[in-house]
Image (cartoon, rainbow, N blue to C red):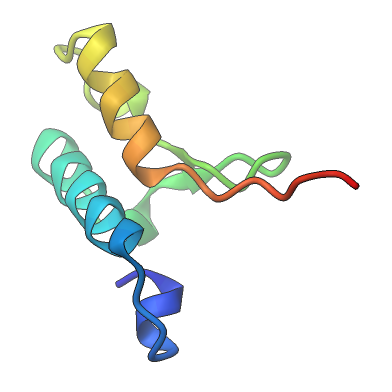
Length: 73
């Protein structure tokens, strides 16, 4: 569950995140907690567990689970 939904503040992007995480689980057979996260970006490292996926589909999933970026002022 996305953190904003757990906190009682769901967003439309919460559904996209959930769909992306579900796709990763179906492709890798691993729960999100079982996968590493990039220490620099906080993003889930999953590509090495789903070798038969096309680059364009991987990019769609990456975009669905992308962490929001803060704008610099």
